[in-house]
Image (cartoon, rainbow, N blue to C red; front, side, top):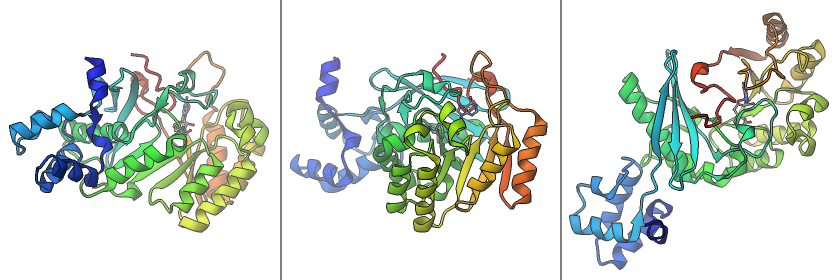
Length: 349
Ligand code: SAH
């Protein structure tokens, strides 16, 4: 059974053009390809049976050649604050997580880009799962489509925003992430605006430059957490090979090409980055290019090596940044009771 499934091609790997060629080669009309393509993407069909305007014989023919490797949302948890966490099973049995975050004005989908993560940030639960593989564009797309359905079903509201802040490092799966965004923003896909999409990265300089060259229309967020090399290296090993100077350089290039701000994500921890020196370093880094800061609440994942700094320290950061014209928000975490908050995604279920 498994070998049979593998022998058939994943139909969503085909472009509309390729699908048209396939239909013509089978002696069918090209417009059928268009209809099937709409089922696959706009309507997120999970099976060929659903394609009711396609004749039974054509559907049978498609089934002989193709599979639809649709994700399965098979464990949905709801938090007391309304947040929904999905355990998403992929066609090969691996599992990732996605989160729906409702606020008064927005419904945000937080999606994963890789199974596990290779980056080893010391404060993140996902880092403890070895990176297994990249998600394909359709696996990323499906997470968004599933949350869009949940937004409608449970809240009667549209999905408004998408953040790539789930499992994995999106810029280490850049081609598939951008291919997914292409479909998510396309009129024949989910028709979402690129400016409502944010890709969050640990800050891989080379890839930020690539995004700038590609003149992407979505937003960039960088998980900074410290603007001092020694501190940052001690909590985020990526900083060893990718220093703050290189990051700053890439950000200048980003701004020059896209004229878009960057958002820094920053957790303030007791005894790690709670000094005035640390706050001043952040302020200095914020002046590299126009930027905003989200001070994220820490979600404990372990034995207590990392502890959220006091409100006093948070206010010290807030005052310093705001006084110097940097828009700063304190982001309370959501879905903590179900391990759905930032850095807690680790397939516990
Ligand atoms: N790899 C990407 C996206 C995934 S992490 C990145 O690093 O940006 C999404 C955000 O959650 C990042 O800003 C990350 O630094 C933050 N985060 C990780 N663990 C956390 C924790 N335990 N508490 C709060 N935020 C955390």
